[in-house]
Amino acid sequence: MPRYTAPVDEVLFLLNDVFQIARYDNLPGFADASSDVTAAILGEAAKFCEEVLQPLNQTGDSEGCTRHPDGRVTTPPGFKEAYRRLIEGGWLGLSAPTAYGGQGLPATLTAVVNEFLCSANMAFSMYPGLVQGAVAALLLHGDEQQKATYLPKMISGEWAGTMNLTEPHCGTDLGLLRTKAVKQADGSYRLSGTKIFISGGEQDLTENIVHLVLARIEGAPEGTKGISLFVVPKILVDADGSLGERNGVSCGSIEHKMGIHGNSTCVMNYDNAVGWLVGEENRGLAAMFTMMNEARLGVGIQGLALSEVAYQNAVAYAKERLQGRALSGAKFADKPADPIIVHPDVRRTLMSIRAFNEAARALVLWTALKGDVAHRSEDEAERQAADDHMGLLTPVIKGVLTDRGFANTVAAQQMFGGHGYIAETGMEQFVRDARISMIYEGANGIQALDLVGRKLPRDGGRAVMAFFNEVQTYIAERTDDAVMKAYVAPLATALGHLQQATMWFMQNAIGKPDNAGAGSHDYMHLFGLVALGYMWCRIVEAARGKQAAQGNDGDAQLDAKLVTARFFMERMLPETAVQLARIKAGADAVMSLPAEAF
Image: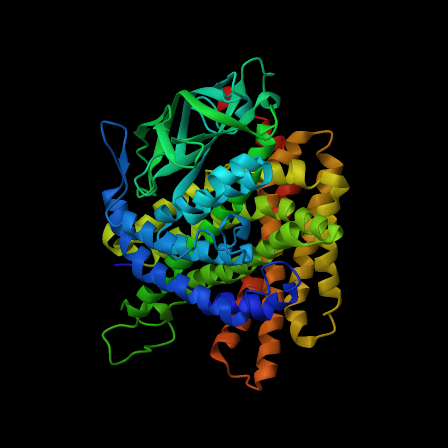
């Protein structure tokens, strides 16, 4: 049976010591999230995830969801009761606006809770996760009536939400979608078409499901310029807010998939279903991107979350499993063999996962705080800078954290040897569940292209130049610190690689776009390593500051951070040199073979 302990202390260290969250008390909601309140909230979230959700993870995987002949879907045993406890705890409305029944606390806390939920039970966590994205889209683009009708029930958890984009013949290229919307005399629309891969499309957890659906209005332009967004409830809502008739939307089947079996991934059929336009006609893709950006950050958190739970179980096994003797001589002479954690290659594997997890969590929280600034600050310049950060880092967080998160679940599984390949230990489930995070909400190759093709040149490169300037300034201000130099010097080298790669694209990709495409994957990961390295420097500085304040250089947890940071700088950050070399190789070898030669 796998185990999970939510990293509450790690999060509190990041919030209080690294990012000094108290500095944000001028923003709405932050003053209500004092350090004591935050600690209490995260403690309760940890308890719920460890005691309620984690025990359901393996059974949810083995039982899966069931579609009945009448189209109803039931979730695995225990999920319905767990969801009831989730909404009773107010977790869905933690950072939602108080005007619609939320608690108005920082969205950063929701990001933390989402990590805990996903580590404990990824399939379950997707149900409330999609609601949060749908709420964000309606808040920004819905009209007042739509907000009043749907948001209170969604924020309370009584109603769920979904995102309907993909169709059998089109995924990333949404300009090809065929779902049709016909305008009615009363201003509503009738939608007909089929959507696939719809997470939580049908379930028995909530009394209603609010579907956000992309469709093309009759007569609209072809391609992405003719796509509109509609709100289509599973059950129609009467004027007094009560539930009325069943709408023309149903689950045609449940996808048979590699992992996340506890989440109902549905084929959804829209048969003359009643819907209402969200935002402007033919502007649906822009509105849906609000939800997609929320979802992409959430998926990045999934990569971290599964890496964390896989790491915890691999460490526990490495300390228990006896096999062989240490190369330097027996460490446990009273036992027939040493635990495998004495072996350098085992430690290399575990340290690689740990070094990623701690910096990735910092990167998520740093970006989540920027999101709070973008949505809550009254200073226009602050909001713009924070929004620039979000736009630039979203593809990095989604792509890098899920690529490395999946690789880390595989590495953690390897620690178990053959035992990792069987279901009993739970490691193979982590691998299967993590694999989808690299694919949905925009496959990682698309994230890399988005970063290089759209985010770098946007606004004349304003966002990436701001990132470069921040990291450069940080390095320059610490080069005279003998201890910090050991960390900022490798970061300076890696940042130089990133800047060279960026300049190379500017010089070689405008006239030959394939150069950008061929180097985009490496550039995304190069960027990710620099961002993680920057996070490690900030973690080290905070750890040293805390040691000095405590007057205690022997704090084992803080000492471990300094060692882990050194491991990252020595063993992981140097990968940027290889990535730069690949980028500069260009597209010739990648694109030269004719298609028939493959």
